[in-house]
Amino acid sequence: MTTLIVDARVQDIARRLLPESVEIEVLDQTERRFPADQLIEGDVLGAVSLAGQKKALKAALSDGPFSKVAVFELDPGEPRTFSESVISLLLGELNSARREIGEARLAAARLRTESMGTTARLREIETLLYTLGNPQLVNALSWQPTGQMLHLGAGQSLSQFLPVNAVGLTAVDLWFPGVVMPMIDAFSVMLEDASGAIYPMQAAQPDMGLETGWLRFTLPEPVEGVGRNCKLHIEMTDDSSLTLGLSQPVPDPDFRATGAGGPLADETLALRAWQSLGGVRLPSCSPKISGSQAVSIAESKFVPASSLPAPEIFARPLQAADHVSTAHWENENAILVHPSRKGPVCAILRDIDLAGLSHVSALVTVGHARAPSLNFAIGVAPHGAVDEDGYWQRRMGPWVSGLPAQGWAQAHCIPVEPITGRADLLLAVSLAADVPNDLSWGLFRGFRVSRGASEEEERG
Image (cartoon, rainbow, N blue to C red; front, side):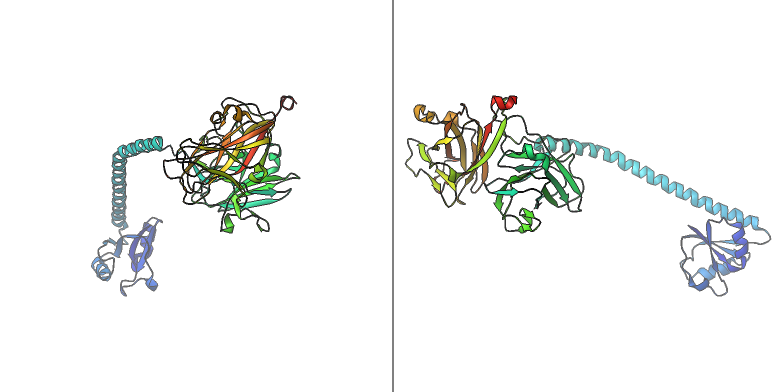
């Protein structure tokens, strides 16, 4: 806004001559003050005095902030000269503004030109870092199943806070001890962020092959925003019921599986949370041990260690002179296999009804806080087969390697021979490094047994 200070005696004439956009601040020259000591707004370009009173107006402004402004004389009988002076003043201001704008644009163009090389280099470095570290996805949370379970009945719901940022979250894997696909339409999973926004999640069709108990629920695209908390909601919507796997107990009730009336258990849900960029393919829920074999799962159930026969040592290193043992620990409801420093130890559980077995997995843990890291494997063979040929190693699934003290994991096995009736389970543990085997408590907490559909069931 442009402002001129005007002598009160030429106020009316100045108002007629000046554009409406120019503000006028009237000065009483005799009293040397503005009306009511008002605050002058905008840029003061100059002052207008009565012809012959230029020095008097300068004197009136000399003791204030406008002492250096240009003063123009206005002769009521010859206003043309004043108009030309004001037009010249405004044109000067316009040219000055244009010059400043041009200088600013030139400086911005120079900065942009100088920064283009730096920006291109930073993009090259960023691309290199992405290529080296591959941070397009991250397993932000992993709570492994422990064998504890939670039953969710018809119409029931639960919620649980997750200690991860919701931004970038794209999928959550939940662990189920039994087959859930026939009931998945009645099972609702939703994500809530700190602002209260709800994101419905869809169950992803399991990969062709084996089912390990993990089922993935995905979002159409990763959650956007800045730093938001995360809460998971699960609800059964009709008359169906379902059993969910639980993980470790936690002291904070906010992170426990919680229903309408409060915490439903001391544990958290067994789950895995994934954060990724849009369009990134997440790792499969199933281990890649089935090859091209298509396994159709008809049913699955969780079998606790207490439901199985007592274990026996089947194989041990010939040079083993240190402690080697196996036992069923009733208080822990787990099967212990204690390995040797000289090599793996294999325990056997004999004569179990596993007819139609297509896949078996074991929940394993290193039971002592000061134990060395251990390796685990599980295998299965027709009852008595390993007693006859002794080849237990070829019937084992992939080893779970380097599990640290009190760590949890799942070991998997697809039988190499058809299991048509009763079978033997093989449980193997070894040390991950050449260290003393003290406190090497390799514990098998429970087993998830999956039975494949028969040819008649597949055709039906």
